[in-house]
Amino acid sequence: MQAPEPNRMPPMSDSNSRVIANMVCNGDAQSVPIGVDYAEIVVVRHGETDWNADGRFQGILDVELNDIGRRQAIAVGERLSREGKISAIYSSDLKRAFETANLIATACGGLEVIKDLGLRERNFGELQGLQPHVAASVCPEAYKALQSQKTDQQIPGGGESIDQLYQRCTMSLRNIGMKHKGERVVAVTHGGVLRTLHAQACPNKQSLKFLNTSVNIFHLSDGDNWVFKSGGDVSHLSHIEYLRTGFGGDRTFG
Image 1 (cartoon, rainbow, N blue to C red):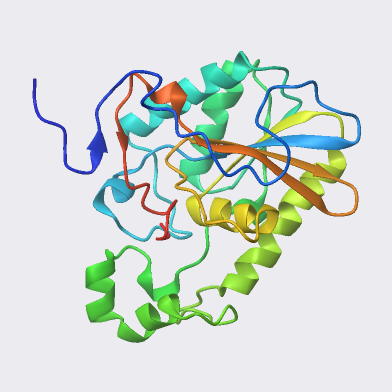
Image 2: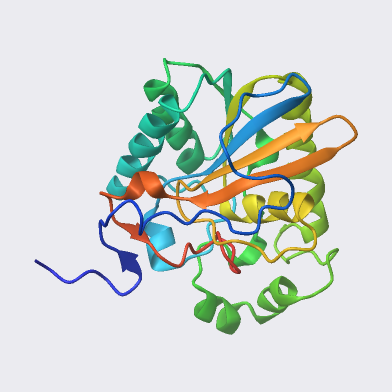
């Protein structure tokens, strides 16, 4: 058997592939009937791409899933199809998310996927397509902007600030929540968006590692009340290899 790549987790037992959040902000992560006063939004990160594996900033460049990513998307779709009725599926319009969403939709009865540009990854401007060590060398000002602690700092080359990303993606999830009270829906998005949504729900908690096709459950109700029930769950990948760093879904963005 060939040794796995240093950054890649080989197929393993269900217990070892489960990365459930141990920092639920409100309530617990138990499965309960969905209440009429809130929407349950299952936010899924897209499947793996070659640029994830290479550690490149993807941003809004339209990178497709690789073969492993497609297998991951099929696996999460089969899992979600067993966990309760899904009323709607939303997705970023970028190929890696939209293909993931369509594979989930196929497993869940053929629902039509609704594109939502608010679920797009952050625009990284000049950094897109580059690996971090290359970006630091060839685009030092843009890389410095990415590392800035100023939330209104935009990235040269048309890139977004953290504030712009926050306003865009939290508004998107709010709108989905308002439309689907009492229902369970899926939203397929990106690592940077997931970290931002988690920060909205859990402002005083450390961010999780959001691996490719990780399942993350949010409850949204009136009064802008966000509850993060559980997250980082990749138990459906127990028989599929996956990247352990989650480039773009941890402290980096991809």
